[in-house]
Every structure is written in C-alpha cells, then in structure tokens.
Image (tube, rainbow, N blue to C red; front, side, top):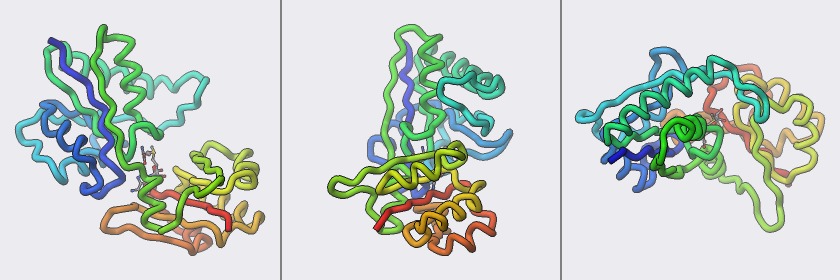
Length: 241
Ligand SMILES: C[S@@+](CC[C@H](N)C(=O)[O-])C[C@H]1O[C@@H](n2cnc3c(N)ncnc32)[C@H](O)[C@@H]1O
C-alpha cells in the first residue's frame, strides 16, 4: 500500500500554537520533508515542529525552495519549478514504498505556502495519491492576537495582500477595504509608510515582527521601523478607525 502525504501547518513559531492534529500526524509520519529558504540552511517549519516532537527515529530531510516570486497565471521561474519537481520525486519515492511523508509548513498551508505547489506537482506524477492537508494557525491570526487588533467585525471587509507584489494596486486596496493585512512587508516598508502617510492611515497600522516567538516585537513606530532592517517574518495590519 502507498504511503500518505500530509501537508502540515505548524503555526507561526510558538510550538504551542501547533494543533493537536498537526502534532499527532507529525509524530506518526516516519519521513518529514521540510522547506528551507536557503541552500543548506535550516527550516523554520522544522524548528517549530521539533520544538514538540522528537525526530530521532525519523528520516528528516530539508529541501531548498528558491525565494522567487510566483505569479498566478504566469510561467513559473524554472529554478522554482525544478525545486518543486525534485521535492515531489523524493516524496513520491517514499510514498511508493509505503511510507507516510509529512511536509511541515509555516503557519497555514492555504496561505502563500510551498505545500500546495508540492501537492499539485505530486498529483501530476503519483496515481491514486492519498493526501491530507492539516490547517494551522496563520501569522495573520497570530498577528491580530499579538497586537490585540481584530481583523473584521460586523460587515467589515478584510483583504490579505503580499506587499511586495502590489506596487500600483497598494494605494487602491488601502483605500477600498476596512482592514488590510500586508504580508511580506520587510523589503517595502519605506514605500508602504509613504502611502500610509499620504492616506492618513499611519496611526491605524501595526506591524508585528516574529509573532508568537520569544523575540516578538509589536511596532507602531512604523516610520522608525522603515529605517531599520525588519525581519522577513513581519506582518502588518491596517485597520481603519
Ligand atoms: C511565505 S508567507 C507564509 C505564510 C504562512 N503560510 C502563514 O499562514 O502565516 C511568509 C510571510 O508570512 C508572514 N509571517 C510568517 N511567520 C510570521 C511570524 N511569526 N510573524 C509575523 N509574520 C509572519 C510574513 O508576512 C512573511 O513574509
């Protein structure tokens, strides 16, 4: 019998934010393949999972996925596609030998996660694949909780955007919605702060760096933050009064 593939959301950093199901699935899966952002680098998802689960008896692999933009509806960068295919081939081999494979992923698998690309790549090559996606606590909810700022109440409308992608649309989106969650903000803080100031929204914005981790920072001094090197794990919520 073939093994089962699990994409497991491990939450934003604090291992206590992993779900009971994520912990159970990771415990029982003999193989983990975890994403790493740099070649030979560590995997944040793996670090989170290892905070609660002893991996000594497991085969734990890390796989580098280049941090290059993937645009919906446009051809994918060949390096990125190659990494997906290589990871899928390794996973497929374990599945064919009857071993379950878990792919721990930061936050929730449904939100900007490589897990879904691997799942789709595997579906192309493995017949009758058995797969389960385990949702996780996203950085979005964790940022809202850390800053004690709700995301949407009553009839409010919320939007989630990757700040690095939306150059010309940012202003329009910030004007249209009641609550705007900006992810991947670390490289575009200066531009964001200028737009927020223009729209008189600077006081409505909060930035949380490394949400739920020991060195978490909740920042409302966005003009100062924009002059510093903020962490890649940073999420901003702009909630209109
Ligand atoms: C590739 S996306 C992954 C999102 C993840 N799947 C989720 O559900 O949170 C990476 C972005 O998530 C956000 N992020 C992830 N972990 C975070 C954390 N601990 N604190 C703040 N933001 C975080 C940042 O905006 C970062 O640029």
